Length: 260
Ligand SMILES: [Fe+2]
Ligand SMILES: [Fe+2]
Image 1 (tube, protein in one colour):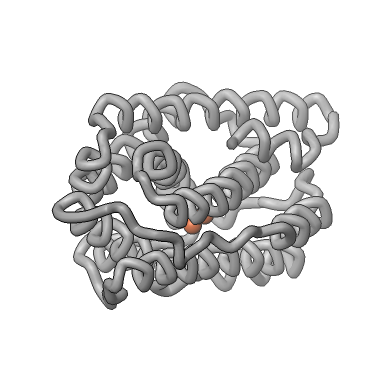
Image 2 (cartoon, rainbow, N blue to C red):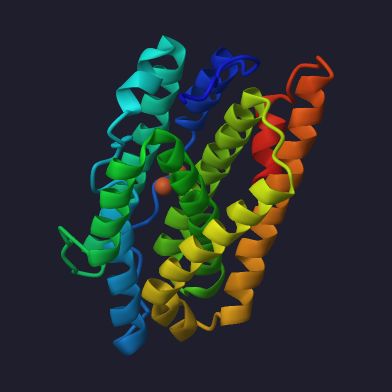
């Protein structure tokens, strides 16, 4: 069944959020001196190559077999989805610039991204939206750890921009799920956390080397994604209570700040 997304969500506010978020975006200083060397740099490059492909460099749009039906249900929703994926393509551009900074090429395919796209196509748009949301929650943790640990000002500047955008994407998912007015009870939470841990583990298998070489730990990553899922679930249930009580949803800016 196609989700009823747009019962209480104010699409105009979210369009305005994306428009404002396109302003005041300081470009990282790609020509700043590079102090990273050796295996730590090689591992970072490998990680950035995969993210450049996966974070807006591949098919940067909904690709599930039934996604057109969802988009056709509301023109405002389609516009929001377009704006969301425009930001994802911007992430790929930033990551491509980081790769050029380190004299590294972009890659065209990776097994984990091919698998991810294949499952999204087959499993339908409901599944795809959850898969993208969970990927955004765990990627948000990756970019925060990269900004904290990697000693490169340009990479840190890039992470700051992407972290800001992803907070908006996570908040957008929270608003659209709250609009569905489903119960989001214990069983839903169990499945959500299980899928989040699976998404996080796939990310960690591929990117652990880069972050560990920069000083991060396994515990830090898993604490981060658990906290990210906690915050999302708590926020969503709060939004749902407001919607059920007939109140308007929190302002976008507040929701984005809560997901930052
Ligand atoms: Fe992204
Ligand atoms: Fe995103």
